[in-house]
Length: 390
Image 1 (cartoon, rainbow, N blue to C red):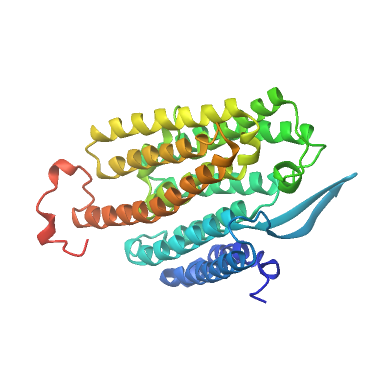
Image 2 (cartoon, rainbow, N blue to C red):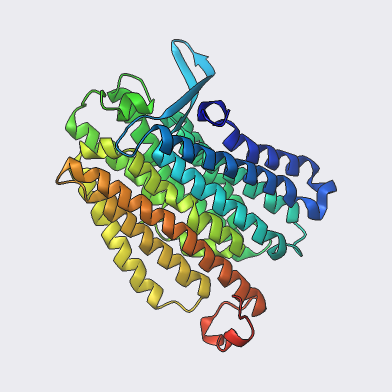
């Protein structure tokens, strides 16, 4: 079974989804044990993700372009078959391991961090739902499923940023994040519609991104790529849609670590990396990717220097680091042979950044709790003696 990922790919998003449903239905009775369905679902998805990584590395060496794919019919509308297609290649495997492994560790951390919160079950239900949506996004083999999971990730972000919705600033931050990212999502939706018309009414990755895909009109393709990139700009908090991420720090610190440092904000990077064959045929769009990344990296770093709120410093640092990833993705414009190295550099930085920035947010959460929820760094000092482990 574990030798062929096609037999269990569907279980990777299904396990955390089941955990979320169980918590939503029985959280009232589970009470402070509501973390177990989340932990078990995330852990099972993590094990299967590692198995997928091993299988992909064994059967498809880095120079290969093959992937494990499996397809289920969702519904039919006339002559159009809408399918749930899952795909596992090298890019998918490394993203799955990042999401599920970090998600599992953050869920464990959250047991203690959220232990005194009366909405304990709701928190873990939302985290499980997020893991299901994020793993579905990176497993998608067509733009329909990718967009559905993309919106699911946005919904979970809204629920978790506004987790303490009785707090006016948290409710306002959740609305702001939801509305700003919707601007980018409109562009993504329009870009997908353009791809639908340009590639013979097909949204399968193999038909659009494969080596045998027909080359469309260059001007139309450039516009489509820019629209796709608009979605990435919103989700990954790039200039000028970066304004929502610092306010998103109103959510619990584990949420900041999971969604706004390690996983959700990297969805835009994943989207551009996945669509590299398209951007390679649209050099102008690729230059825009690199320029927006450079502007964001510099601007966010300068803003971070002026901040005194501990979590906002980390938020602007995250925005800046995401900018570097987009610089890498846009740097292969001069030579198609450089595209492979550009994607490798971006995903390598994504992988390492996810771990160290999640650890920074979790450490910040520990400091904030020790400081009785004080986040002003000007009021902190001499903490080494009191928080040696942190």
